[in-house]
Image 1: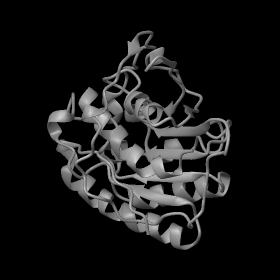
Image 2: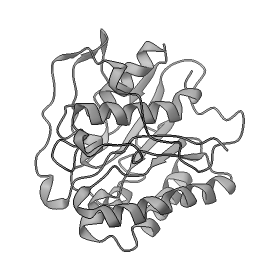
Image 3: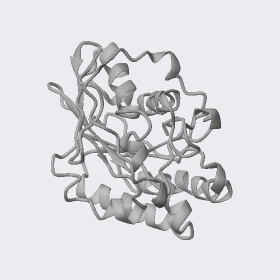
Length: 257
């Protein structure tokens, strides 16, 4: 079984996510020096050998799915900026899909930055699930990056693992040909016990579904993520988002064309 790795990216508590990042118009020259993940490898399933979600020609469509961390609160474009940079430098052609307010820089590495995503501040796992299949899968992705659960740690941690499992089942049913990458959530210092309990359940949820034939794998966004890279004790700062990008990229790079 392949094991994805990752840093960590938390969602914001319901009461702390009223802000929204502005639509960036600047040019990014993102550096990959901070994107290296120090997290240890996660556990969980991987798709069958030979599985290839991305097309042989043309862009691979990636859906960033989640809450304010996916939106990029605290750094315009969030982890998507560095993830695009990493793909560009390795000559992988990717784009981002999603229906929410576009944000991020206009250009990265001299190329137009795809500013789409499906991240909404304050949303719980159930609220994210309510967007599947519509509108989240309106433009069917080849890869889904799911970071969900931080808001549940604040509003109702009990049963969060079951709700995540139901969301995974919905994604598998609605996007059977996509690679679904689900991560642990990044540290949330004021709810550390709930986060640890929730994160511990995620690899098993992934393994169960991978064993049943789903195209799914786990990425560890928690291990090695320092609280110094949380800009407000909830959302990553720029270095934290770059760390997250490194984890996502390590998980999906082998599937990119």
